[in-house]
Image 1 (tube, rainbow, N blue to C red):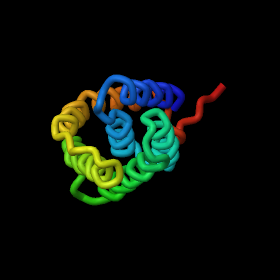
Image 2: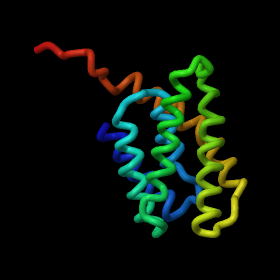
Image 3: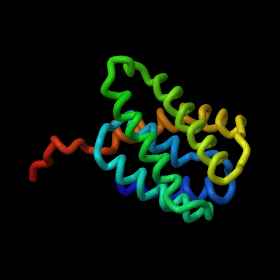
Length: 147
């Protein structure tokens, strides 16, 4: 969890300083698709506030979008349609379009379809990297180490 928080902080700084792509949103959606845990909601809320502060936008706007996206992923994960990893792509697409529409309504920014496509294409390496990390280096809670 500590490594994930460090990576999310780095992505938030990258997103606010250099890249117009919302990497934190993609990372949170992918993690909540891989692991359905309550910690995803706390990460979404906290990093939504952090990204709002870094980008000097309305405080809480990113938190609401991140929370809605994570909840939608949790609901979609429980349905029978999420058998493949390709299900993550429409979830990222709808969340990024939702983010762009809310920014259009609240901040008056135009919709950038290239940013949406960059987020969509960045989903694949983030998914496989996070899946590898969670399978190899994170110990599940039900496994106890004996001394």
